[in-house]
Length: 231
Image (cartoon, rainbow, N blue to C red; front, side, top):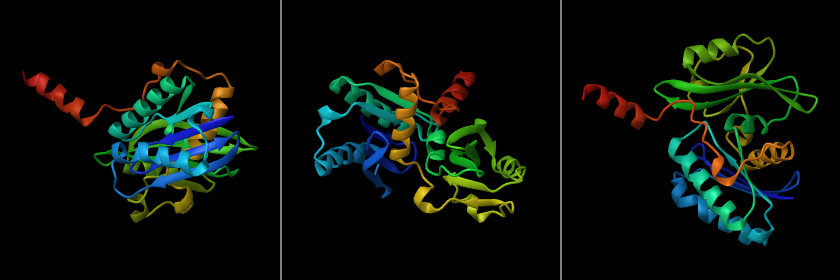
């Protein structure tokens, strides 16, 4: 089974091709381009370099959040358009859970974080045990202080993933470390792996039934609401 994985939840635009559980190719760009500029060329180039035909793709796996509002919308709209055109299924996966697939190591608490703006972070907590991923905390929005307090409660190593560069400047709790940069940010190969697993477990929706997992409202929505209250 050939899976096209896509993640546009952060400033990193990443695309991968997976044949069952084996990576065929992965393409990551973190050069300041907008996803509207880079996503389609990356998809085109990965097909060109691998000599794989679009008609051979069996499933599209797309990261659906949380993350950048604009980036998520671009990724989902592109995935839906391709799935509709190619008449194949598309599977939406949680961005934070997909990041935990970057580092499938037992007995370490994995803490994916993403910037939720205004000094806040999206935080989820996972742990691998015997090849199974356990969720210790669903994704939630926390302040920097709440995040560090939560991480300090564990009596085992904690690995930070995602947009954690600012946290690296803090005095982290003794058992908390930053994941190696190679596996820190979202990877489309992890999105594809998780998408394949969830698809095989029956988590399937029609192409245009997927909803993005924003967690919080966009700043534009909050400003609109404030203006409406003044009217």
